[in-house]
Length: 296
Image 1 (cartoon, helix red, strand yellow):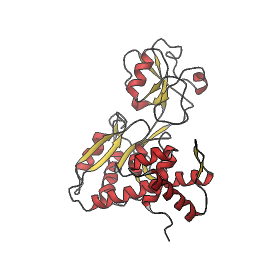
Image 2 (cartoon, rainbow, N blue to C red; image 1 turned 90 degrees about the vertical axis):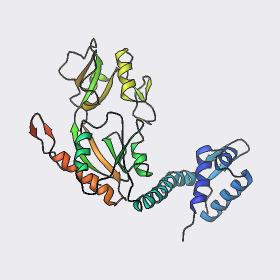
Image 3 (cartoon, rainbow, N blue to C red; image 1 turned 135 degrees about the vertical axis):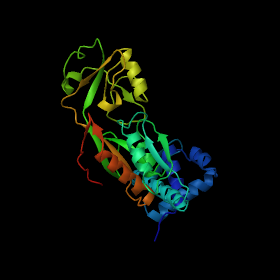
Image 4 (cartoon, rainbow, N blue to C red; image 1 turned 45 degrees about the horizontal axis):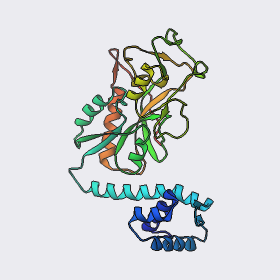
């Protein structure tokens, strides 16, 4: 038996996000007493309190924290199922590809050319994401496939194939102490100012916040920080900047990802074209056969 309806889960998530019944009611366009009654009904049905309430404060209980974490995934899954059902019945549906600006390692044109030769090829709409939300585009159905960077993007719930693996480089001003070195190590960067990436929780530096590579390169040019990125995102380096390989930084992989529950021919056809383009990719006048990646 289903113990929570989708609407009830939406009510709970609104209160969990706002931690305020009044604001949550406004967000849901319902009366606050009706919302409070619905939350009490959910708690009674589940047999656990979800919120600790006082006249001035609302906070989640451990049970509420668990329901918020899993409830968000459940709502995303429902939304994706609805979108995919509608799109599956539309023969004119476009395929939507999400990536960060410049985040294709020079592969996108070859992939699109290979896909154009597929007998069931559709028009491809290219969507640009923020620094850290490409995985969300795929999980909630806003995009069908995406170009993601591992280990930076979260692959939970996504199937993927590796298209390209590369080293990471430190980007520094041409007058920087590391600029003349053949390579650097992570220990060489310990006292350097690194950026805070907008929307990326944890793993950030203490420097100014940046939203994309363009902003990062501008701040490096001004001498406010340095950066560490996959090589393809910054080469050739802009005038006044130098890329120094970081010898002991874990490599970065560009992967083609899609929702692991998505079995549509629309997606399978694009994945097949991308793998074909990967196999025939030419570097320095020769064909490079890249190792096959496991799909999760």
